[in-house]
Image (cartoon, rainbow, N blue to C red; front, top):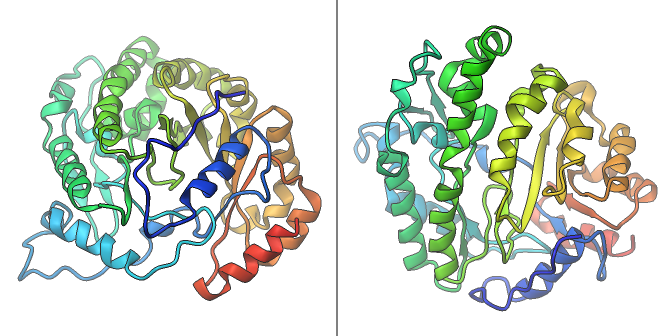
Length: 366
């Protein structure tokens, strides 16, 4: 079991008076225990990417300019939390965001922006030539902008919200961005040694990059938290490998798990992001990792719903000693609670704000 963590060094939140008790519930969850009820987060996975707004070209010439506007990013977040009540284990946490492939862009290439996300065009056309990735990640304009966003947020957050770190994706998802999917999969069969070299590059600087931002946050009394909005008083990492849904367990072992071993040292907590049943093909290998304490299960769409069909998989995760984080539709909540234990379960629920407290009362009777 992980070493217990306390929240005494964190900056208090006036907007979340019960934050300390909520962190205690989360700490119990890490240990597959329950204080009074399981932790509950009132928004869905990827909910932060919904919506968007038209570009005001009088203010910004490009979408990238809007994304890079620090004052706008912070003002937008602050407006979104103004007057909001944060029920249960839902927290006001700003995480600097330039898109899901920003870690890849630290080394070379550029991000193309839309209203709600960004895209990375592959820059490696030959695995024998990694010169397109020769940039110093700490000198990257994207790295510097994330640092600027972080410092600006820390300067103005006060006791209104916490500040987290960005969405860092090293490992095979980073390699897929650099090379493109087709070249990645061909290299597994035809150029495994060269692929191993670029996979190593993807994690080479991860500890230093993570540590840089973690040090900024810790010096300001902030927890470790990112897009998943689960604050941790220690060091929290969200390892993942979404492209593993299309590879064998042997390739997953060789080109992802070996690199993940470079990501986890020094982390107090780690939640592995299992994005769908394809990634779950490697679940036994993931569950065997002692540095992973929890699994986020994200089922797909269509036939992958309802969540109730995945209860055997969730029970398998719990039986392996790992806690789970899972989206549950409110219409399935009662049956889910009837069939699952409370211990080790963190619920994510997308309900209207006016319904949150009544739904929470149902969970309190679990």
